[in-house]
Length: 638
Image (cartoon, rainbow, N blue to C red):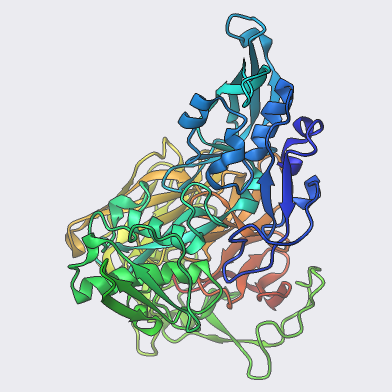
């Protein structure tokens, strides 16, 4: 496990071999290369996801520590059915051991002899305690579940002596061990990748991203390549956390046709998916939605634009075909192709930023990674929005623009009142009956509002005497108090709703720290009579203990601003909604960020408010640049 197991690694130089491989359509090696050098692996060589690792069998006469180390190394390999790993086990243990779950440890497993735990304390038994700092568990549904920061791993591996393969000798083998794979974090990131699979929000023709972790190369257990594993995972249904609010359009029991191991895009970037008999009677409308689930999943899996998905019956006949353009009907996010970037100016009015015709989002930016936020981005021009928020006497301190960019909601400058107005010249300001009695409205009062993809408006009242989360159906009428399960006395400081409307990102304060929680939005009833609750809060950024700001930055990704546990400096980073760290990792720093805004479109810049630099923007591949010296509360639609 490379750098993941420094202490256990010293006595094992030949437990694995590694072979380089070229890049395929989907990252990774599909099979054993027929040529190339075989060499020992050092820790620094193990981070490349293009590298394929194969284990070697235990040597004759190996001592117990070599057997344990060899087995732990073999779990990081790509051997079919983990055949080499099973050679370190007794026949019964090899038959019983399942590799369907993954435990991820920060620095990898550390095995240490523990003779006090030996059964009978005789020469025929030897026990090791394997320990480490637990990062996460990936379950049988491929769902990532982060551990609590204080969680540790402590399990035992027991060995016995048994006859060798030729019936002679007395070889040490493992006869008792924990189920599943045990991987260090760097090995996990090399072997697995986060993939969004898609299901329909209950009662809507809108897809929702369900993140899972799939094996990059051919899965040793199923022998399926990455595309095939992922399509089968879509057919298996949503993860347990998301399943109450989404539905699959595939008939119950639908699976890939027996024997399907390798699916691949053809030269037209189209994919044929052979299904079993359970799907054969699906109607045209249902089949199109089934295909949309697969197509959007493939879009997140590959860098290639998917031309179409064809679903076939078990007899080989075509069930339906869906093109990429047709699939847009079911897109999770239905904003414009160029969403606006908004902010509150020094006078408390709302303005929109746009790129000047002579510039671009990335013009003038350096590429050396340095912070250049002290220099102005001259490609940006600003203009007041149409309607009451862009002129007049009404001032606001925060703003949220609806996803169709036809309306805006703001919180009054004193933090006590919610305001809504059209973004039109003849629009009239309305004052919904949402007011905060917070005595410290300067730092409390109402949070910045947020629009979900259904057109509902959300806001949190941070009044310590009466904290509450409120929803206004379609942004009008009487507010509904939303029950939030699992707060345990903590207060919501900020709410950011997903485009699909079934997930809420909440900044929650317990009086000492402010952390990110992701909640599932459950609904009963329709329209103004619907009842909404937020349930099963889970950690969105478990590695951070003080989160300042958050914004959705993708269908299952967020950008967060805060400090790591035990850290002193502020960081900006991408995280997944399941609590895992995005491959994009940490972003360039900028001074004293209080707000951040992003959109699902990776081509659009991040926008943030810095107490020192004003409104700053980070275009893709560039550096932070000041767009507006005096401004606050940046926002994209949502």
